[in-house]
Amino acid sequence: MAQLPALNARTAPKSVMPEKIIQFGEGNFLRAFVDWIIWNMNQKTNFNGSVVVVQPIERGMVDWLNGQDCLYHVNLQGRLNGEAVNSLTRVDTISRAINPYSQNWAYKALAEQPEIRFVISNTTEAGIAFDDTCKLSDAPASSYPGKLTQLLYYRYKAFDGDPKKGLIIMPCELIFLNGHHLKECIRQYIELWKDDFGADYAGFKEWFEKYNYVCATLVDRIVPGFPRKEIADIQQKVGYADNLVVQAEIFHLWVIEKAENMTCDELRAEFPAEKAGLNVLIAESEAPYHERKVTLLNGPHTVLSPVAYLSGINIVRDALHDEVVGQYIKKVQYDELMQTLNLPMEELQQFAADVLERFDNPYVDHQVTSIMLNSFPKFQARDLPGVKTYLERKGELPKGLVFGLAAIITYYKGGTRADGAPIEPNDDQKIMDLLKELWATGDTRKVAEGVLGAVDLIWKEQGNINEVAGLTDLVTEYLNLIQEKGMYEAVKTIL
Image (cartoon, rainbow, N blue to C red):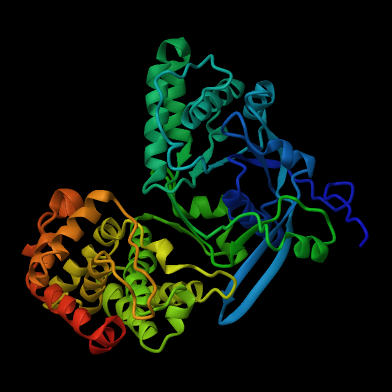
């Protein structure tokens, strides 16, 4: 077999566009999500912008990226409108990649580029944090917000506080209200370095607050990353020795909450992702969309897993296709959780349909056991609010969700499944010990009361949920039903 050519700007075409975006982070997620979105914007709108990648920590992938002239392929897999999709796209969005530790001059020089308008980041959930040991004179500051504050100050100085040279900042770190947290960190650095700014302090502070726009965002796309198993086949298909292929599901969602000092239309005009037909929503608030994702994607995941596993089903896709468990998933999602949200029903139904397509991804064998770690805290965050809201709105408990809670409790009993496979829960040892102790009583009522009353260990600020009207009785009833009939037969009775 002939050796494939290396992928770079000499062997493959690469667009040259003005550098408009500084991106902190070079990992799989940003390359398969943000950079792919910008590639689509360049193809389908007049955005005409490229990305300069800044490596947020000292060791990273910039040498690899620059070695391929920042060219790579995105392999999207999944279902779209019921059809299986397995596509390969060469993305040329990134112009170059910089290591600010070894190329601090190049990093500082970005502040002087007039066409730079956006900052995007994904520096992990721990990345948006204030570190009071950072100094303005560091080359660069160790924290991401510290680096960004340095860059903003260099820009303020370079353009003499020009109101038109502020930046639109869109963090993609997986924390709720990420933009709010980042803005607060920048404010803390401005105060920490007040003396270093000297006479510039007041002017820089005002310029940051008035002419820079920090947006909270919600991102959603599963990105498995480098396709080790299929890489040889993929390289043959694309005709290049691409060592930076990144694999992702076809579904994508980016909700961008406009900054408080701008309008949605102003942001849409500058960042035309919606116009490119992408699933990018520019909204007044990301909160209802965050709640929608947690409720309609994570919520069903949390309860389907123990129900499927104890029914002898190991893969999420197979659970969806099972005539009983599949019906259970849809009951929880459409009849129960969807009824507790406050967005338009048509929007919720479309999102729920997208979620089911994601569950049905033919290219990903998503093990239900991988979802079951920390099941109680997950139920507390994702499903318990729905139980309470449903009870409030409908005057009765949602049977599917409460059955799911009983399934979680049963899973922690251990033992064996009907097919003889051992049930081996893996979780916080204190939770495991509590469940072992409760199940040892042989009294399902005591099991229910003990779990629902474990405030400090499980339910935290939700309090003792034995106090939710009828919950202890219904959980006890379902625990008995599962003990008596087995999971698969028991779930039939609530459909």
